[in-house]
Image (cartoon, rainbow, N blue to C red; front, side, top):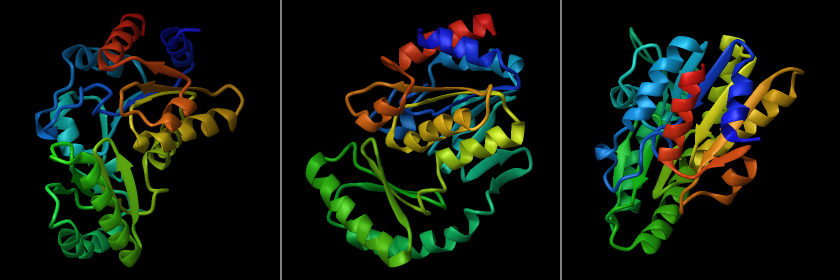
Length: 262
């Protein structure tokens, strides 16, 4: 069965939801994350799907207000910082399970700056997550090793966790407060009967695991996990995926076809 057919058949079970990551999924990876842009065909298709499905959501490591500016659509749910913060018309809403870790992250920042002062990495403060980007480093492997060692030391001292992604390492709350946890929350909140999830990175692995657990936990549930391939894709992501799409343009094609048929 093709990925398109599997998604089409799954989403016929209502209420139906489609959730996607941004970077590397509907937006190509670029050297400077601030320059990333969602492919127009992905945006147009999501706009149609948001009107026809019961839920269309973006679940990203970016902050939710940044995600909303990038995608630029009404009628879409925006969950950022791996689902720990949600955009609402009344402002950003931090999940109560994640909120207590904000102070620990803030306290850890000076130590992190000290640990990484010898590198050319940049630190992005997302409130609940400190993301250390090194895609633009002049020595990728050496910089990565230094970052992993430094972040691990700070994490241990402050009771936090480390997550590695595509040329980024994060200092963050315990790993169970991630995309899988957030996806399960969404499915429960909307009482979904079907759910399609698209992602490309290690941070999407818990979401893929949630799809498997969620669809197996109740007869009739339909779930599809779609990985987006790249030279940087973690093997574990491919192993957990139901289908793998070749690249971001392949995601654009799939979403366009789903929008035509939804």
